[in-house]
Length: 112
Length: 112
Image (tube, rainbow over all chains, first blue to last red; front, side):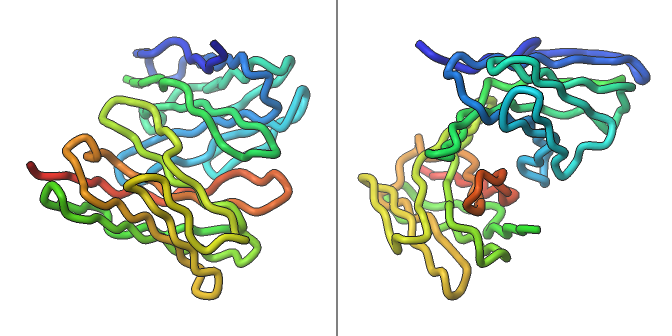
């Protein structure tokens, strides 16, 4: 069955380290999104992509980057991890016509 | 840009009673309004959505209503059950493949 996966599911890192979170979908969706979820803030958009080589900044993009080299993957990189980036990260994908977003299982990141 | 406000932030109801969650949006060009349910430790999942050409949509015990003039939409859950306990998020987006903007969520507790 088609699905969307994230790895790792849990990550502990130190301040200043570079961290990459993986997102992979097998639906062949053009649209992919990264969100962070923090108590009291709901789901906030970090970056998104509408296709290969396309990337766009979201509401809270500072300190994060993404690249889209194929349809299936949208890795999220924290260039220099900060304690403020401790959060749960969700990846999602959708097709433009339906707009329904399907979320991955999430990655829980702790920055010490 | 779009801003989505969601109320209440927490809601407790007795099993069998109805629950109503309300959202307002700021951009009159928004035309797609999904609702997501997130159980503890799980990913958000779409439960129902509505588009601006429809005033109401029902799916078994769940219904969504939309008032374009007032720019608000609501989720109605009837005959609530303990398994309805979760965090519910509303969202809005415009036509033209724009990202969803989420409300901050409502934690619904159904008391048996």
